[in-house]
Length: 303
Image 1 (spheres, rainbow, N blue to C red):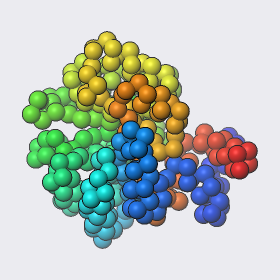
Image 2: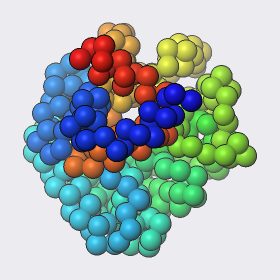
Image 3: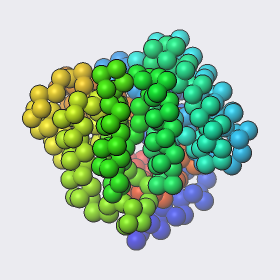
């Protein structure tokens, strides 16, 4: 209850105060900031996926701005020779306003990434977006079979069925590529699993199926239990190291990240940046009030 109260009032605090805890988890406001953070991670044998903060726009003019910014990001990162790829949220490009224009916007970005022989990940958002985002992924994949991937969320009841349906289009010429995460959006019980242990069980069930079927998986977790479970499945199926990677958020569990890299496994860090860092931070705090306890410690204990 205390965490929820803190999470509800922090959005009304001055931005400078919120930045005290946000700066650990956000690369900065500019593409130059993101490149600097990414280059540092590359120097530690860590790949990145960069994300421009911003989602759920209200006007298509904003979608066009976001599209142009992403085109600049791709060119800038490629010219800087950063080892990484790109993540984007379809709602930033008009998914809930005009799905067709959203497709055209995202396609333009994927086409540019493909020109550089690179890759774009379609982030999965809340439940009202899932069907639209799966459809967007499938449509893009038909044209760019090796340059686009999708995020799937273990806490949704429907995800295993979605995986089974998507496996029908999994071929050597057009392989699936997923980021598997727990999921963070607040959803009702009829849509999402609420118990943490059950979410972990479903995560590993989905991962088991994907690895068995030869799908490339970004295992996105900071949970040591899931990392241990993933290693067991990798050993069970003798999965080659080039058929999976671990993924983590910028600034989170760096010790665990270093351990995985030390094991010789590929690691990719999600690097968010942008002027919408305040909205991103406060939304994530509302979605996960447990973060409030860490924030208070960060501000008052660690300075």
